[in-house]
Length: 482
Image 1: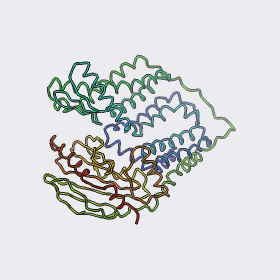
Image 2: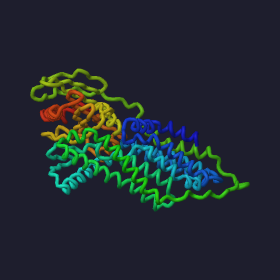
Image 3: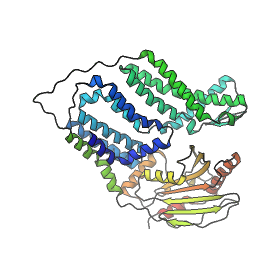
Image 4: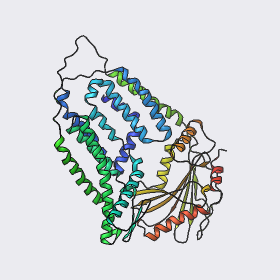
């Protein structure tokens, strides 16, 4: 098994590296460093029940590696890193199943399946949690008789304005609570019913508690007469509040604990019966699971970034001076436009015509350079002419920054969601006459912006997009293969 784990770790090294990077940079997934020690402890806790059980390597299970490899390849073409990581973990679980056999794997299923929390998934829940938190706060304020005007994720009271940002959605609390809840349930309960009830409580209680926390911050702002004073240390307050909630959850679950499982039967070797050696299932799982990465590697072989054709002169907002590109190389064009109070940096990047969707996402993350920000949020940028592309406004805090970003795929504004990913996946396999293009607009600003600076940055990005005429046509012409 150690050999198989090493081989799979090398085979799926990009997935492992991306997961560890998320653990290190995101406060929502810092607890993932504890998942492996917790799974090992769960195995140690079951040592008496496992005593006498024998591994029975089974080659029949190894064929399941083929659909796992196919699912991994589909996730890779669609640019869904979480899907790739889940399939890599599925290959690891299949390795355990093939080497240990069905009986021993079933006895260890709790600790082994707990490894699913190594995958940093759940970010897709953030918009839903934001909407719930805003709605919870609005209902609470109404019941308390505090006048408030709530639009989307913005809550306005007489003391100021609150915004339910991504960091306030409660995702980091929810994921940590579920990971702890599953561990607690596996450690203290044996019946599936009690485990299910406690895990359900670990999901519902943090969501409701985060709504109460957000409501409490708004009420505190009403009492203090200052929204900024109430929200100054809301993250620190949130962790303290979360700790109290989890403590109450543990105390509430203690009376229902069950005794550990009794020791398993003392099994004796089967005499003349010989089981398949464990090395062959390990080799079979690793070889079959490698089919997905091998197919992706063949498709990506020799892909190089195209040179972007020269763009026509871009229009400039009022109060700004026209400028020519200062850097054109490797499909990257950079234009700096001086304005009256700041400088606009325009970056246009062309990607390989057969690049999968995650290449576009990585380039977007690189150009926005917001990985080290304390908090980020993305919203649609409302522009005067939709033909200029589907623009998004990315906002960060600490440092404070605004970035306008848009993408074009297949000679048209990139579509979002699954439809857009399917189009990029098709182009990555069949090719396209147009290179994917990413464009960012960044106004320079101080690391700590005043409200007037924030409004100016947003307005400058919007003005730049609005004064363009035929931007999509220009991008399409520049991205077309010669």
